[in-house]
Image (cartoon, rainbow, N blue to C red):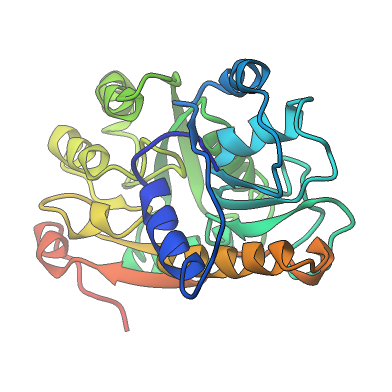
Amino acid sequence: MVHSQKGEPYDSFTLPFFNAFFTGAQKVRFEHVVLNNHEKYLDRYLAQKKPAHICAVVAVGTVALRAIRDQKIIPDHIPVIFGAVTDPIGEKVISSFEQPQKGRFTGVAFSVHIKDRLRYMRKVFPQAKKIGVIYTTMPQSISFKKWLMALKDDPEFHDLEFLYRRVGMRTQKNGPQKMVKDAKLPILSLKDKVDIFLSPSDQMGILPEFAQYVVQLTNKPVFGLAKKDVTAHRAAVASVYPDMEASGEIAATMLQGVLAGKPISDFTPKRPQSLKVFNERTARLFNLKKPD
């Protein structure tokens, strides 16, 4: 199992994954590799360890998926199950969701469809037209920005204006927390230009500290990415977020099937199931009410 990094959202995927996988008598040994968001670390690890008898690989996160996709040591016929990956289509490991794949990759993506996320954002903030987006140079965040930019001419969302500011990726163990602090000037540069902020789909955006920092610096509301960044004190107002417990359980079922000898084409890639969360206490700070 290759981990992009420890922490959220990855831990919320792996715990239910293992709980579901080891239901019953499973004689499988997992070897764990934590990349701390350094893709090339996997090449060095594999060259040194020369692991044998690999039956399958589980890639947790976009960086882990990229590392597995690009390495040359594990044979390319070994099946790969991914989880907590923002844009597997953009990473060119699958061609579509809910369709049998010809390659060796399948799994459960992280991101709720961008249109579903924006539809609920509209319900929560019906008057908001100018949206601030602080994104990072993490690959999943770049995909997120591309999705937003692709909606420029969409009839449903063409009236929304997204204003972007960038924060550089930090690859250390506590890199996401450092990126939050790095975002101070980008956040302040949008303070008087936007109605609300939209959390990016990356490890910075999922932290409650990010939404709290935006609110602290700007006194503007935030539409969040997950659950904890909404339930936290004075953080995001609401979000549509992936059900990571269900994603982990689905991915575990996929791996069980592959290890039982079924072809990977039997398990179609899936988007996550989605849930909604709304913090009424935070909403009152901005005179907002929970939508119907």
